[in-house]
Amino acid sequence: MAPVKDKLQFGVSDGALIPDRADKSVFSAWRISFFGAIALLVLLPALSPDPYWAILKFLPDGILRTFEVTVLSIIFALIIGLFTGLGRISRIALVNRIATIYVEVVRGIPLLVQLFYIYYALGQFVQVPRMAAAVIAMSFCYGAYMGEIFRAGIQSIPKGQMEAALALGMSRGQALRRVILPQTFRVILPPVGNEFIALLKDSSLVSILAVADLLRRGREYASTTFEYFQTYTIVALVYLVFTLFFSKLVATMEDRLNPQDRNQ
Image (tube, rainbow, N blue to C red; front, side, top):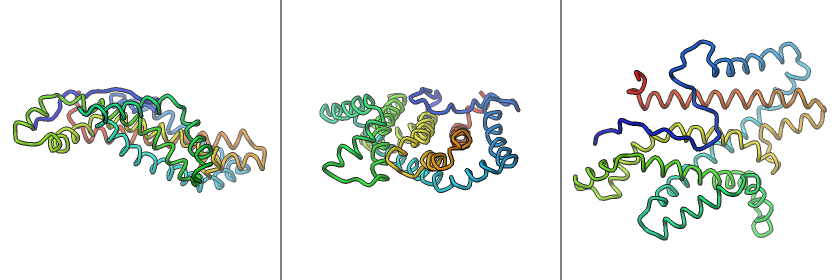
């Protein structure tokens, strides 16, 4: 089956921008931001160990919890998004309507409200652990956005691909699994990467449920030492380093999956 030559590009989230592969400058915006943030994270503790070094030593477990929430949420969001995207293009009216309602309703409610609703409101009927509530809310919310990404990605594949697969004797399901979806994953990598980065940033909201993530640990340190400026400076720099690192990683993965674009 011939590969898709024209790659559809579209943006869905407010995640960090994927670095432009055409920008080879030593002083590109990404390099200045990334290495500048790392330099500050090294210089501040070196020049002023108290409190910056003490803050850095207080944060590692919060960083691990942030990644735990982010990775679990993005995995479940991808699964939900795949089925939602398939539902959005389904020829079965009921399935299509349910998927569309889910997308419209979830995207119309702020993530913070969904976190409160799942943990506090539903907690009157079913007690959900804080960590589970955080992952459920973020997966449920981002699943709707992932659904739209999958839908757009699938619809970007030329219809001739499906027709050719059917002509070869494949069923519609086989054609979707073997021909359409593999090409779709290559197309949707940049927006999925942006959603991952946006989810990493939004994971800071789980601190309101007393989940000991990066922001929560920073708040705990600041509330006991009253060094709010120093603490939140370090927290912001840590978030910045991670989001810029993953944006570059997504760009690298995109280059490997689409080597024909390097010479364009």
